[in-house]
Length: 168
Image 1: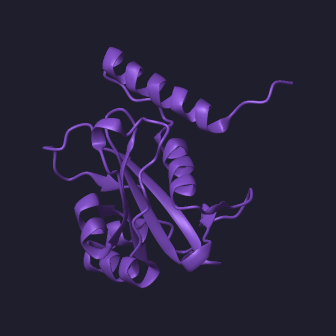
Image 2: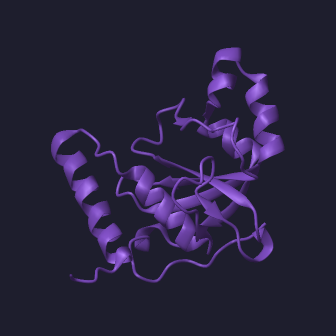
């Protein structure tokens, strides 16, 4: 059995997804896996075990022991408004949510973090139906969160050297 470097595999998956979208206009359903991989790597988190339910990673350092739900959004057209964050599992156990925004090449651009209280309060402000689903726009999430990481040079986002982590 060959040993594969997961970071290299994710780089290839990124390229494949971007090429596929450019060729077909359709997206491959792998942005969540790329997002989770990138947030865990960039924020130095520990992946949650199988069946963790409600959270994708566990914090280290200043986030030690925090349960973190990870959401990703690939922004193909920055002019398009109303983009949504995936469903936030309000009924499950977690302490914060990290949202990673990626460009059309599935490269990380920024990571935002919001704690549970801010999210519960923000989802309660919307329609009852959306609140039950834990639905929220990207703009709303950015408004209630803190930017915890940003790419230093967007032109070199795909390089092996990753930008320094920004902490709140």
